[in-house]
Image 1 (tube, helix red, strand yellow):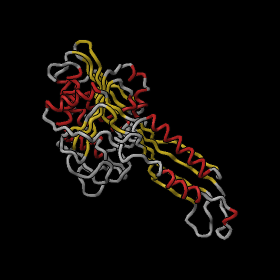
Image 2 (spheres, helix red, strand yellow):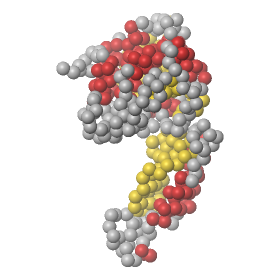
Image 3 (tube, one colour):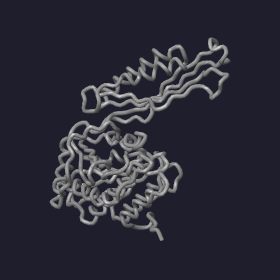
Image 4 (cartoon, helix red, strand yellow):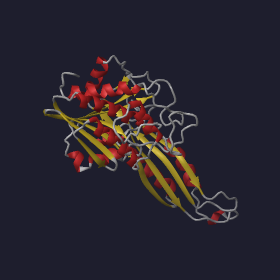
Length: 384
């Protein structure tokens, strides 16, 4: 009989499997939040806050004496991807699965908080934040805007993200640019249909789309985010008209993703993109909207050094030269003055967001201890 994750503490591997089997999309993580809140209460934390920035959960653990507040963060949400058949554990929700490892991240953080609660730091406070809506870039900023989270006065924040392809437990962390700023552009074009025998009477999006797509992708600069001025525009979807032979298209849609190493460069790239859209689509009625907006993440020296020091003490190998990566992560949206995001190796296997991706249970105790000891070191605890 499977243990009920909302009814007292359960083993970490069983918890990860329970979370994996019941994934929820961004801004819909109500049941996941309930599981996490129950596990935090069972761990013996002092306070659990619900509904932060949506369905976010914060578990608060106070030391005996005043001191800094350290935030450890994991993500609640899953992805709209169907997991391949035959995998175990397997999502029970059709078309939704934890294929980025957020189930593992949550479980590592639960493990860290259990250890901290069992042997409390002498001073300060630890806040375990289980953040909603990371996958669409809206969650961190929503939590940061919540007055209850602001009232916690976070002094330093840490987050881990698993990385397939790196040896299990290996750590990539460094001060400076860590993940890219990115945003999605949705362009809608509205013209006029006509009979396919009289295309001159139509206002078709064909010319706009065929010209825009290569023009947008030509804005790329550099090969990777370590290059100065790095910029990337990737076309992700294009469509126009109905699937018919007798009608010229009247409407069209184009989706593209923009990436830059920092937020200032993103502002410049947005201006370039909007200028190209006006140039190519100006003969039609059009609208540009921006979605899935992620700010760039920069790890600070003090926070990055703490994670690096703990990794060294634990004998975890360090990976240099990986950062920054071209992907995005909304941890930077929390706005913590001191923070670090590290990538921890999850071994060989399919990439993040692949339908056959699998988080390795062997990483759970490694990540849990890394987070626990990072919090202790940041608090000046002798047991770090």
